[in-house]
Length: 328
Image (tube, rainbow, N blue to C red; front, side):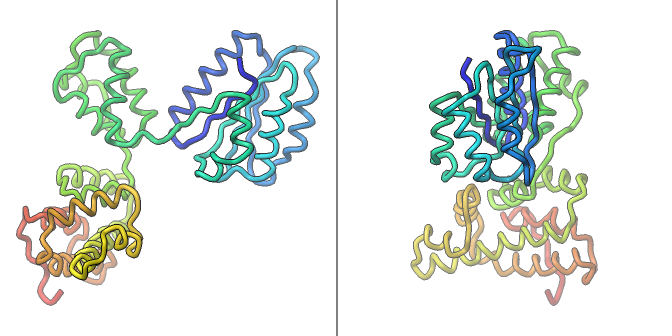
């Protein structure tokens, strides 16, 4: 085995499975002693270095695990990892569990030293568009052949909760015989464990995925999300879209408009789709509806903000003619 393993990212399941595989391989290789440390703010890295230098009297080989619970890898942690990479203690294997790393950190000297000395494992989030493929691969491990609609059903029920998705698939393996897996069998065996982020609502709103918009909205509400925050989020999308339409009329390049309006990442693609799908003439009405929604969510205007939120995407994409309150 290599003397050092470094796992970084924010997909919990990927990190757990990678760490479990490393532990199992280490145990088979004779690393029978295990030391585990959680490095929080003000963690004493010098004490850890001193402890690492002292071999146990009862075990010749040991595994030292360090989980960094801070948001970034600080200078002390980076120095320790670099030292371990260049001067590893004898009969010692190191396993580091790190948070997501930015580009500056993955191009740093300490990261390069870790890559040369050991193995680096990235654990990025499994995005929604990747989830069907992930589910299909996991079902195949259990000799399931999903019937049409099964993967889509599992994706809806487990989105945003990869650990629960694995547990639900393992439950299916216990309850359902291998072979063709039907939607009826899935519905009878699993629960709805999907978790959503407010940004999911924004993307569904902009792209006009009304079924997903309704599903995410209901999921966020059941998780305790507050209407004022979602009202602000959708209103930001409408005003940003209005800003893009104005910029395009003035001949401003789209990339420049994105920077000016602080539209980044996947939201850029969603905004481009919204520019094609939502006519400019519909923007004033959407702004009025957002004003109504803001007042309802703060208890300053009559009406249920959740109902207004529910209909907003359909209004934006021309599938619902729902008049805003008079005077708004």
